[in-house]
Length: 209
View 1: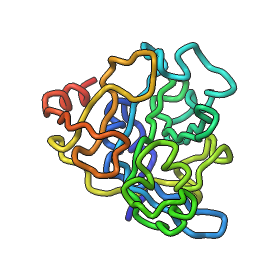
View 2: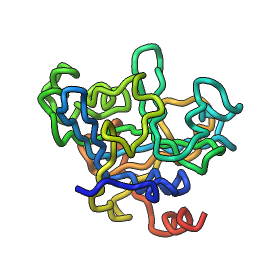
View 3: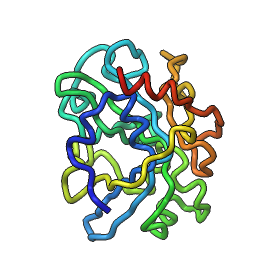
View 4: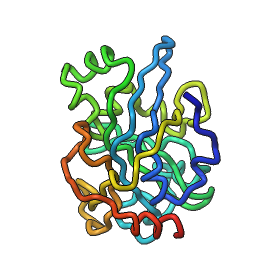
């Protein structure tokens, strides 16, 4: 499949969270083997007006990549046990990112099963910490470009608007009411099952924002 180029990431964060659904994340390991997952769930985070965002109080050494050019990985350690992967969005100098919350495993499944110690395909990548473990992503991938030969996104058919669900984000304690989680409704690989469909009117407003 065709790799997504820089133009794809030149998209407002809330819209990018939707457009990422259905795209395929690829990690080429040092051995040359590939692991792939289709994105089925995301969450948007913005540096302005979003207290749940790591960049809400400004730039730090930890979040500096969020202020860089879009199309790079922001990896951070969460709850002392999981690395989470985000795709940087917004123009350089403005903080924003989309958290990758869940994927459908596509390739390299045997290695994912070994890392995750489970053979259940539905739960291999059904959470932000699970998918990074399955893909073999960690602190070494902080700031990694998605235009490299290490990590990239492949194009794939988009998800029809009527199949895109929306809800508040999960596992946060601030800005909890913002409905910035997006997911493929009905996917068995979601981190949490919710059936709220994204009406077409909401999608149009996002595209004009």
